[in-house]
Length: 349
Image (cartoon, rainbow, N blue to C red; front, side, top):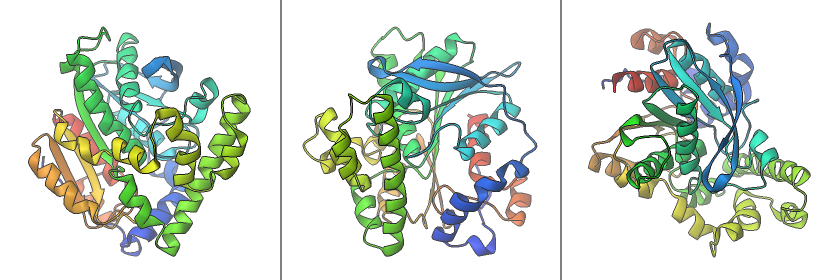
């Protein structure tokens, strides 16, 4: 797969500026950048790992040729994750069945269950079971998994889970050859390193605190829906990303420390085990992640022929807004360079 070079607009040739622009401004204007309408989604409740109910949307175009299953990052919901909904529009218009879902503790899934996040340890299996149910609804194989940021980590875990579940002979109604693979944007790969890196910098601490406030809101909404399942005092103490996981997550999962939990759920460690085509788009100037991860990512990608690493100089964190010249060179219909590369990747497999 030959990829056109990525270049952002001149003012966004900085990881932080790209990240902030995408988060604060692009979401207000994204609908103006696409001619594709919202797919006719059908609301569905799937059953994930451990019988956890997972809320999602399903849309199947006429003569669908394959299916994309995706979710978003550390916070949000289907209602407000415009970047994921943009993919849904583009994919549906190109003949993909589209399955998008609120992952554990998010959106309407949080209303259905008090089960908290596990950063891929169980969400990987959720992806696979969602795909199996979607197949029964008429979504065609191959099934492709996708996500961005922490959602990218979940999608990488989904590939590993799919390999294991289909080879174990579990009666999912889904065969190993029906799993296409995955493509992810700026996935979280090593939370221990990246969180330590983030909080050392004043701007990084600002970003971390903004995420932590959203996580606290998430926990409060879960408490409102399931008051007996969450300790309100623990929510009050959860004033950081680390604090959220320490107070609310690790005890339920049986980990002695947040660091042990992050190490176990790290997607970097599972890269050698992926046996399906996997595209990773990663920006060297991503301000959310420790730069030292890049060297390890390159090393693991070089060792595994199933991994296609597209490492770029620019892009920020889940940004990848392209310049007009870049759009022209790539023959893209819009500035959403990363999603365009992912759809190309799926098409060429």
